[in-house]
Image (cartoon, rainbow, N blue to C red; front, side, top):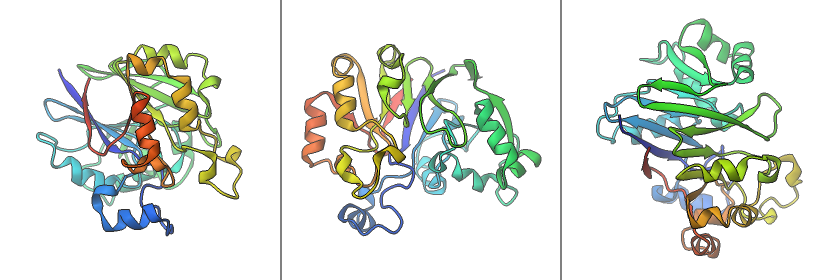
Length: 276
């Protein structure tokens, strides 16, 4: 069965515009919906309409509105979570008793993510009331016929849970968060094994967070990512995603965007779809 992956959120957890920010990019995005970037999430939709949601961002209601325009989409049949940083699971607040059609939804995640949900309100109520049913992603798992997920643990701030990158049918790799590519010994091997990889591109440069220690929010700078995967970019489709609202890649006319294109990288665009 054929599946298409839709990029339904290409921003860092807080999206663009970011709440409280009066930066030029945020003000422009408030005026122009085409400049908006929603919280990090993918939708994998089968030709029969079934849908797996990968990460459930705080923007899930707006993302559902977009998905309703996809032919055949009928609702969320399962979710998979990469980790417990707020932009990747907080949309689950809409899956509780107040919502319609959220009963016994399979939730694929690691043991530490399952333990986090089970110990803390309001998430534990989702499990107690049967809105979500935890399923392990520690080994490759068939979500339904024709759709398989493989999780790779990656180094990233582990205040609450571990973090995984997800491989969809061995064709598309989704790695929205990582501390540094060099800390993941298999990074080049795994990226090279996929036709398409969506890679953490949170910050283009350290100048984006004046007055803050970047070690508090470690991510590989885009310049580092482009250097690290220069060879892979010649043979594979590498897409930069999870963009902070400060990232000049958010502006397709910026010098940063032109540099990425020259070096063989794409910048994630909302609602782009990829067959897997």
